[in-house]
Length: 204
Image (cartoon, rainbow, N blue to C red; front, side):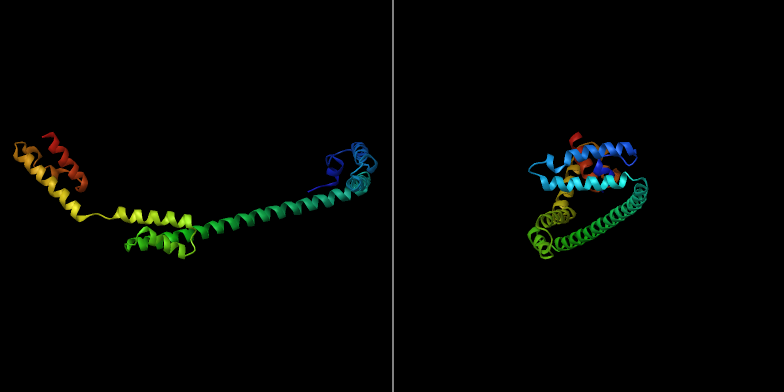
């Protein structure tokens, strides 16, 4: 916010003598006769300088100006703070809406992935919901990958268990009965038990 003090190039606490010196310097710099080729610009600046000096060189006028300026500055600060607060609220609301929209799209993608649809189908569904292509591709790939990670193959798991059991019983019958109950002794079961059995077979 430009002030009369800015126009003369002095601070708001400048003395009368400092204001007079600043006026003379600025007037000489912007006098139209000293700015050939830029007369219009110089004439406008020169007029602003004269008006600023007329007010600030008069004690009573300067007091009125300072009071009005102080009030304007308070209003300006309040206005700027209000705008900043409203902007922050708008940004927070925009984030909330974006996050809710993203969560909804992820839920849709997971539903179609859980129904057995491939990535291209999930991608197409998201595009149909006006999802941006790059984001749709990312969500579709993640949803299908997550669905695949949740799945287990009963056939493969059965084969692994049978093979591990066979190796375990074979090893136990060879003479080291200490490992015969290894499967029952290992807490947690599942893959932890299978790995224990496999390593026990290697030690035998």
